[in-house]
Image 1 (cartoon, rainbow, N blue to C red):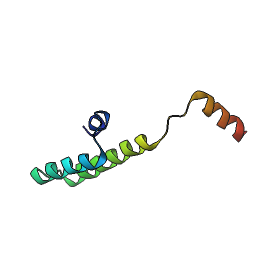
Image 2: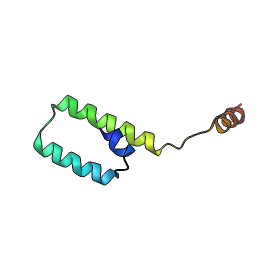
Image 3: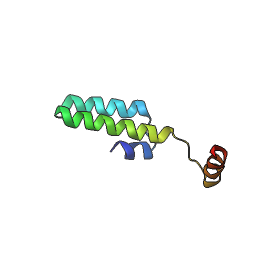
Image 4: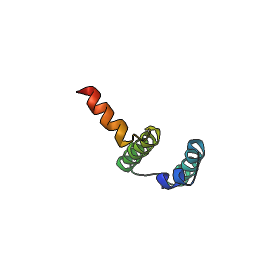
Length: 65
């Protein structure tokens, strides 16, 4: 769901507000809550990582050699 919201242009703050409402309506068991937070964190990290072209990747690999 979070991934789809980002794809549809929702901003982080708006997603947080939606989850506040969902959290108010229902609670997840602790383990599922931790899993959800880890997955959301991973999605946010993916969004921060810039796309690296194959030419850039090869250049980096050559530079490291």
